[in-house]
Image: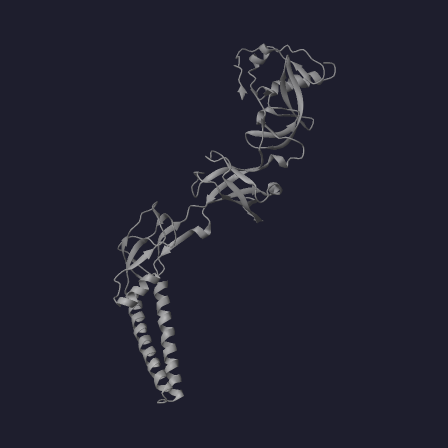
Length: 371
């Protein structure tokens, strides 16, 4: 909780009298004229270890280009950018002479295989009855195996071309050629980009859509190499302005330095739903550690302007009756807004977080010899 005292614009002369030890005698009237604000320390559950910029990215295994398996005419596009689709949903339709040729070759291989299997069954029966020689049966067996292999090959070629197993079974049963090839979604996802237009003639493997599964996203954090020692796997990550306090967990620490930025990439996985982040977004991230990791006692949070430095040590000005007590603290960590510290502080204290430079000047004057 912050207690704000109205700043008096009029210029005044501070007439503080020195007190014993590390105390400053400042009257409530002088506090008001100085415009000093106060904040109560808050017990920290986590401590900022690193503050850095980050980019929201899609994991490579969740990002795919949906392309045409055969050359042909793109006759229809069924989905638009931004739409959510499910696995197996038809995204586009293609007219392809090559696709018709694959179906015809499949049916030829199917019928050749049926004929070869019938010949094998007949010769097996004749051999069992002693009518034909073993050599003839071996020749028939070889032809049947070759026909079966060719049939399986053409079946797999149709599946590579985009037909499902059920569609291939239907073609085998009905032996009726499909006029168009349906291009289906390989997984559940969101359409990020349309890369072709209806009526366009496309070569085989031409891109049509970019599809991504956005259920899991990553943060790629650029950490200065000199700060990398503070990062460990499993640490939580906070995002400035995010809707979830700690939406991500560190999962990878890079091992190479970017020559342009001299930073190392640290990857965090966004594990909490409702984080509201979008692919490609730039954010300010804080990698935090558990405050219980501190070996010097409880960790407290105060606004960064509340800490002043003197003689290589850090201090805060704690309000007491009649003025302030100068209290030494140990800095555990800091970010752009807050300082995390140990020391002789508690939640019921009021610590000056503005006008600190004036208080420091008074304190320095008090400590000068002859003051």
